Image 1 (cartoon, rainbow, N blue to C red):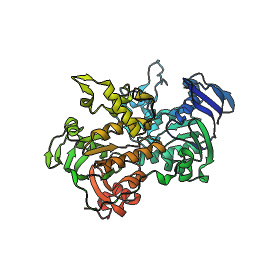
Image 2: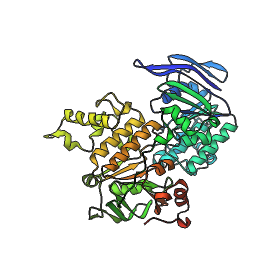
Image 3: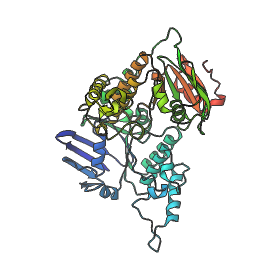
Image 4: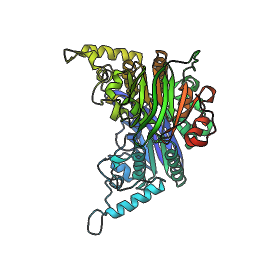
Length: 502
């Protein structure tokens, strides 16, 4: 179906693709993996006509091709679902699905009734219950992902490319996606699947191509490799080296923060937990269980409808982000681009964003002081960039995440809340982030980590608090922390029969 031969591309004299070859066959799911910055996104854009290659050949559907535009590639049956959604929040779900594909009535007007009906049918095929008449901006991120998939399936698809499709979905939504992709594969569609979640590669894909620094490392049948081998091909290190050694506490750590009977909106319904000095506590559960909302309530991003937060013996029935920061609490949000980073500013401005008092003199910004702090952060957190003045928008996802970690790890004195800290981050950057987390805990910070990746929870957590339907389903520690026990609590909280830690 698709054959890329010796594809080359440079930007500003920097070689991004250095002779990449890849063959995606009809009726097979082909994984494309590599670290952030390996060239995966550029290769996708070349395939989809967004970027013109400097060299190499593209064969599609039996003919030599050179796309002049994304529209030309799409008209031939190539559809891409990008990690960053291409959506219009003030248009309805149906309007987003059929954008550019006018469904006209006999009188030359938009046939909105037909659009709504066909959108409803597409969403039903995906197994999701989304009203096609609602505005996309009112949907959750997971539902927005499903709209993107429905948009692609509204056309005749010969090659479907998905870039990190499960970065914002998990559980039931991810399983429904896999079912649909297998169905499309069986119908003869060629699929290229890009993901940092290696377990998905082995569950879903037939072939895998690894690229590193713009160069091909190799293509294998998925059944012929295992995770350790794949990680070694990607980053040159073993899978066992990703997580730091598990720590032991001779005495129970001191409690830094106590949350008692916290309620906030419809998603948090009377939750209590403790965060302890130097301990990494994972907040696990399915998407929609209330994890992010609980973290935002602790930080003051959502109002407390009930309960209280106690820090160093002082109770707070009302919390605000400003008060939380003053108390030494930091929050790395799940959506780093829209809620965390100032994308048009540089590394220095982003690192110091939560501590402007340190870099101002008489109300004026001290750029030299800001740059010195950023230079230290770049070295300490191994941030790959051209220097403090580099715009974060030009950086890979993993390095953007390190910038945010640097910001909050230097500002937080008591508690550091990390919501999906390795979402959309490659294996090498994950190992760096895990090291940073443990170093912060070793300095005495109490860390609350929200993660949808069970291996990450098991590998990093000293304790695991599991949520289900807005409630705390249970707490695990020591030998009880394993994937089965977490999933049992997350899916059958009321009759799990597990021993809950005190």
